[in-house]
Image (cartoon, rainbow, N blue to C red; front, side, top):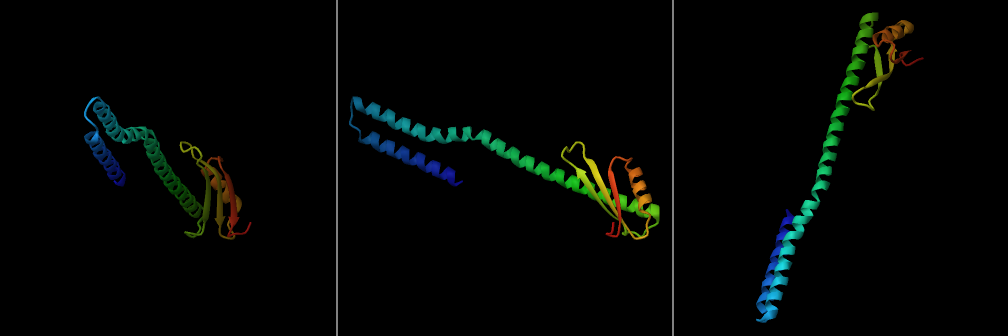
Length: 160
C-alpha cells in the first residue's frame, strides 16, 4: 500500500511541477514546447509504474507457482508419512495376531522410496519381536505379506 501512495505522490508532484513550469513559461512559440515536455513528464510518471507492474507479472506468477508447489509437496509428504505409519501399524498388528504376541510388543520400521510420488516403493521392512519368537517364521510371514518384493529383517528386542 505504501508503494501506491508513493507513486501517487510522485505523480502529483510531477503534475504540480509541470503546471508551475507551464504557467511560468513565456507566451509564444516556446510555450507549446514547454507544455509538451511537461505533459510528457506527467505521462511518463503515470506510465512507468504501470509498465513496471506489467513486466513483473511473470515474476509474480512464478512466485505463486513456487508457493503452490511447496504446498503440494507438503501435502505429498503428509500423505507419504500417513501411509508409512499405516503400513507399519498394520504389519505389527498382523504379526502379533499371526504369532499370538501381546499387542504392542512388535515394532516395525518401513523404509520407503518416494522419489516418484506416482510409484512409492517399500525398500525395506525392519521388524522387532519379543525374545523367544521364531525370527525365521516372522521373516517368512512378512515376506509372504509383501510377495517377496521388499527386504525384510527381524530382530529380537533390540538384539540381533
